[in-house]
Image (cartoon, rainbow, N blue to C red):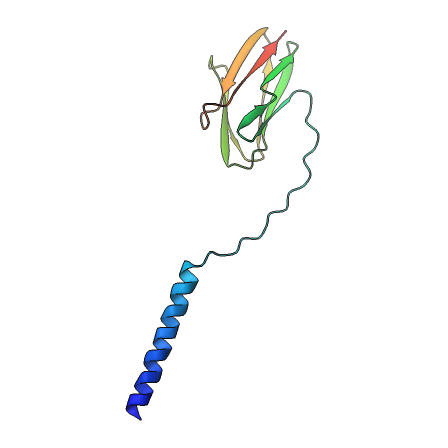
Length: 123
């Protein structure tokens, strides 16, 4: 009787251990995130999407505010001008705006993905 009881306990403990191992190794299910439709891009907006600035070149008159919006689905990007005129961190869904008051060509890039770059041409 004691031997049968011991086998039952050993079997039970082994099953519990197996269940704990399986549950620890299994990937938790993540609900699918529902996204709303992306609105049309504004004329003075630059979107961060697929590790690109879109458009990568924008031409505006002096006095125009340009807005960069992170729509990449990635956590973070940056927008930094080559000449130090502006710099911002863009978390997913966030934006940064800068008003260009002087004429010229202003190049910028992303610290996170240095191959990302663009320019604003101010006429």
